[in-house]
Length: 368
View 1 (cartoon, helix red, strand yellow):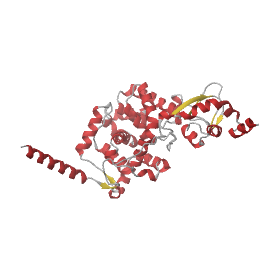
View 2 (cartoon, helix red, strand yellow):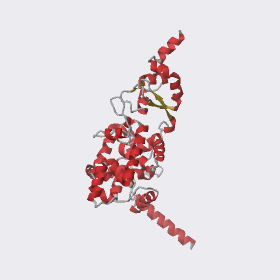
View 3 (cartoon, one colour):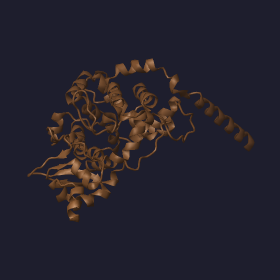
């Protein structure tokens, strides 16, 4: 009896393994023309392509380094409907969002996993730089942790991302909305690119939208399309407040926005299962950075000279300063983000940096 049970178990396991192997395809086998037609139907995907084509993801990063699942290098695994259903259902049980397994969500999973795995890989490598801050802010405002993945949909975790209509930053604020939440936007500073201020503003915006709709999927729709479009869709759907019911009445981009959010949530959890492998970058770590406040004018070139840093690194850590200097102010202080190891040196040499004297010139004078 035991041998019969064991043999049956082996045969079932082998058949399931064989069935899974038949679903493997190479990237060259994917019908790119059908995907291009799909992209043309959804404006959001053209935005993804725009971020992708602007050099945020290099060609070198399109290829995985490690293979936990022992897939062939260029294979694109797909799974049975029951597998997707089980995974998404498990996510849905633990989430206040409606993570449905439907055609729209599956199409977005296929888009990101088959056509833009480099975007997911880049997000996995960059998340340690931003997600700890996102999680702190979301916890502060008692918001769902899943919202941290929305920044991937919005900007691919690029704080300098800019849309065709003028939205900026990790959370893609338009100027009017940014100012409404206290962000300064002028010729010298754009707080929409300030990681800290923009993240807090996004959390405040999420809170305001939830107070209005009491449904997180509708919050996402309103974040993307505006409350006016969501209210109009609700009226056209006979006052239904279910996102999936009002979805046909929303703008095209917003119809794919929530499915894209679900797909990114899914793939950030199941990257390895889709052959999206990555290596962590130790320099991309939120806890390796710290901030100081200044109200005197400082050029990045002066800071780089005294701290023996690359000016590009300072600009990368402080993208909100459009002219590569911190303006002076008598009424408020500005934040400067630096590596932990450089904070003490900055504080020690702050007055010399402000004076404009170079490090070499100061050392020469000190020798005399």
